[in-house]
Length: 69
Image (cartoon, rainbow, N blue to C red; front, side, top):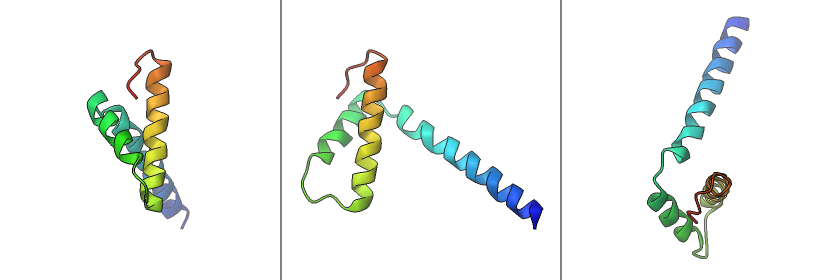
């Protein structure tokens, strides 16, 4: 049972690391388009979470001197 927990934990960490690079690999134009779509009314809860991720990526890029959105 301990081995299964270790494997599950390792997969969870690996998948979490892979998710972080998704937005970093997005071009500036793609990010601008996604943020523009987030300004539309009636977002689903899942889309609202994704929009928060887009806004955080905008902030991260802004701190690097890239004023994308």
